[in-house]
Length: 132
Image (cartoon, rainbow, N blue to C red):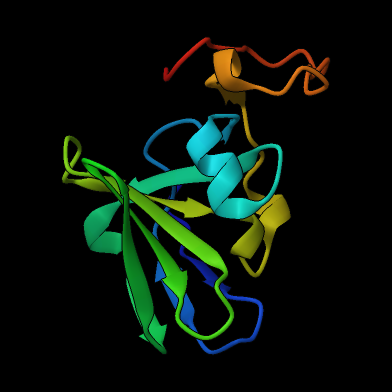
């Protein structure tokens, strides 16, 4: 897949571009993602870090849990990225912020050990207790 993807935050102050996923897109159910997004799960696409570019606006980094840094729109607070210092060559982007989010379908569930009791997906996708 050699596609280029674009996305933006809720208010439109931040726009970005990134390359295709380098790993299977996933739905993360960990407590940290839940609290950062206010949702029961977050859909992520892992892309090459050097393919991710903020085209307009500025993001605010937040060290949510060492070695993790999340980036949000400074104006509206939309969660945009997740990066882990242990994997310096990649960055995760929130699939729901893509201009065409249907282009990347999550293929697995991760961190199911943290999933809420009422969050038990029955979509047939692989489910992992922690990361991949």
